Length: 186
Image (spheres, rainbow, N blue to C red):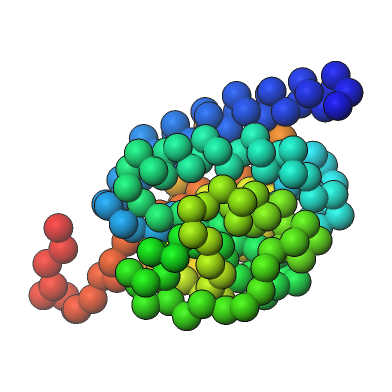
């Protein structure tokens, strides 16, 4: 790998740790809740989404995220691209816990993306599901993870707005507020 690419990856790793620290400082997740990530590794390096998938970027981003997820005892759902209908890689225990329907597709670099390929490799018992209702999310490169989050999404703001050249969106969810003028909310 050329030196420029190596330096870019080192910078990404540093920025990613800062993003993860900022995210988890603001988002409290209970054990076994679901964090959804969608990440265009193409966008991170300034390519059009789906036009430059990079396993090198996935190798920089996924392991530290998995460390955070495992320490917190939460599940990670890694969203694939539109070529697999944005299906997600999850641990089989997550699918069982939430009664998710497992689908038959295996992520590939250009049909799923680098992050799903890497998740399939690093998860202990990976399966694919077509839909999920996550409790929080990280969207790198406008991959539109909103379809996989629970209703009432709350944006999370940190000082970092991009990862590499990809737009960054962070979110958590909360239960709906229901009732009328007499309702009481905590």
